Amino acid sequence: MQRRDALGLIAALLLAAPGARAQPDGVAPAPAGQVACSFGAFVSETDPQGLNVRAGPGTSHRVVGTLPPVKLSGDDPPVRAMVEVEVSAGANGWFRIAKARDNELLTEAAPRPMFKGSGWVSGRKLTVKSQATAGRQRPDARAAAILSGQDGMGFDGDAFVRNGRLLGCSGRWALVEYGPFPAGSEVLSGLAIEPAARAGAEAGRFRAWVDRICATQETSCDGG
Image (cartoon, rainbow, N blue to C red; front, side):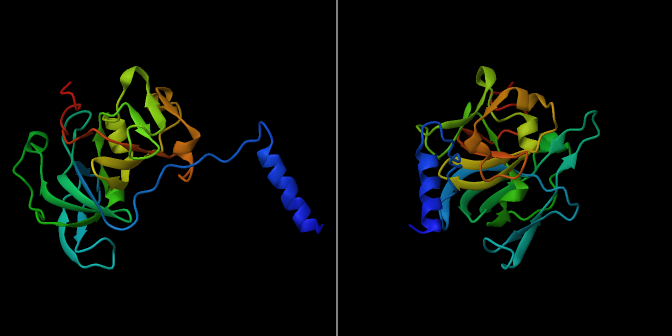
């Protein structure tokens, strides 16, 4: 037997041995190609120039309009008012949005000028709130829970909204990546994160599929 074949056989036997630690399976990626979905999201862009809306899913497509950035109130601490949009499709980390609008209860001002038609924006500039009590490995309520909070905590708190970005969608499910959170964060202390949630993510980040998306920005999803 050649040396290379022998080494390969030894490696296979070690992986198959009892107690051997296999690499954790990561979160199921978003379906390939364009997929339909339906939920509300918020624009997390902070660039004063706003967020470009494009004719298709990618920077090679022409810009058809812009959406205003996050607006901070004069309160202490300031309230973050984000443009609200409706998501109807996803493709390769980009999302088709429509019906963009300001939340006047938060801005306490007249609506800002913005593109209100249908177009595509990067998921890195979109965030969502979810009442789900567990993040799943796949967009299926029967899939393994890889994120779970204590005492039924959902993913609709301000920390999740600030530190979440949209990676994919499938129907009423959203694939969201969270983090990074500062060391000692209360979010981390109250959250059980399985290895599968970290697999494939940048250091300090984790991801999961969540449903029960909530488009209410000014309060928690249950109105509290």
